[in-house]
Structure formats: C-alpha cells, structure tokens
Image (cartoon, rainbow, N blue to C red; front, side, top):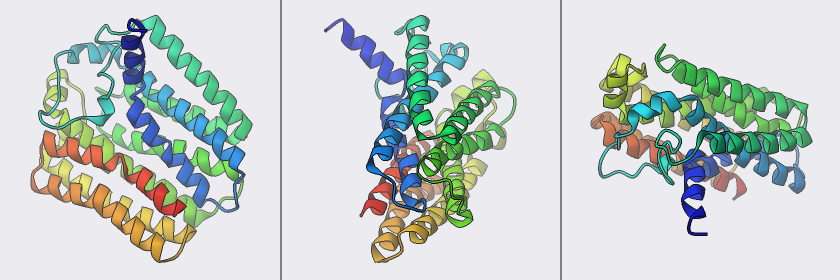
Length: 297
C-alpha cells in the first residue's frame, strides 16, 4: 500500500483530479437548465461520463505536451499561491514520476469508460465528447504557433458542457443553449486559460510558447480577462434566470459571479501579475460549482 500511494498520487496529478472533479459541474448545470425533467439515472451516468471524460482529457494534455513539460521541470509557479490544478503533482510523466506506458493505459481506460457512458446517453453525446478530445489535441499542437488557440480552449469547454444538455433532451432552445455556450467560452478564456498563462508568462516566454500574455503583454491580457469575466458573469446570470427565474436564482447567480469572477478580475486588472492571475484562476474554477448550487437551490 505504501509503495502504491505515490503512483496513485501521480495518476491524480496526471488527471488534475481536483480540477476534473470541479469540472463535472459544467455538464451537470447544462443538464439541469435544459428543458424537461431529467431522470436521476441519466444524471448519474452523466456524472460518471463527465468525471472520467475530464480526467482523460486533462491527462491527455500532459501526454501530448510531455516534450514541452520536460523543459519546465524546475518551474514552480508563483510563490505564496497554491495552484489547485496541480494538486497531486505537476506533470508527473515529464517529471519521471509516472512511466509513459502506465499513463497511456490510464488515459485509454478513462476514455473507454467515457465512451461507454456517453453511448448510454446518446450518439450526440459521443460525437460531442470526441469533438472535445480533438479540440484539446489541436490546442496542444498549437502551443508554439499562435496565441489565438485560447479561443479553441473556450470552444472545447463549451462543447464538453453541451454533452450535459443533449444527455437529457434533443430540444434546441436557442436562448438557454446560446447563453450556456457563451458562458462557457467566456469563462474558460477569461477565468482559466489566460490567467493560467499569465501565471506562467516568464516560463512560456523562455520556451517560445505563444500565449496571449506572451504576445499581447500582461496589461492587455488583464483587460481581456476582465472583459471576458464580465461577459461570463452576465451570461451565467441570464442563464440561471432563463431556467430558474426568481429571487434565489437572481441573488445566488449574482453573488457567485461577483465572488468567483468579478472581484478576482478587478484585482488582476489593478495588479496584473503571476500571483493575482493564479488567484483569479483558482477562484474562477469554482464558478460552475457555485452556479450548480444556485440551480439546485
């Protein structure tokens, strides 16, 4: 058991377990705001598909980027701020903590479970999941090509979230589905992707990785983050009101947006830098979970 513990920790780090578990809220919120009354059994299958799917895609990111991550072996990130994405370890394959074969087997197993679960939910969910995987691989391949790949990350997250919608209905509600996609794209870009790149801007510059902070600068990136967070806040509030109108929906969604998105965005705008960027990333990661609580309430 003692010898097994480091391997389990490495697998948790490979799949960025904390981030994967938080991400489950995205498709579940989509399922709950979709028209109709989803059966509890479908929600359970969706949760399984979401957890294994996010764990697989996040681990796949490390496998595809292993050649780059090996050059980051001594990179520790901003001091004094804990990075929730790296709970369990940072890039265990590149660090030599986990054999490539074991990592590949782990990803393959997770992908297999996800495909079975999404198949139970419907062929549309399978297609959306495979599209999200393809977008993630494409994002990784563009690391040194263009900073516009941040848009690709937003689309990938939105596609993954819509699995929850189509898991419970085939109906396309332009308002709710449009707000869901807008929220996810803006939240990923402004809440996670650019802030995460801001936290690593010095390392990315040295390695020749083209991100928005590297190409456009720290201050411009902070402005873009804030604008995206305002859009994400407005879209999430409108989505909750469209699906669950009332005082609880309004007050809860506003409070969630202010706490998880707007206040960290203002701090980053006032003092753009790695530490404030990582703090904004950490806080934003909880936003879908808070919205899920509001919808359930």
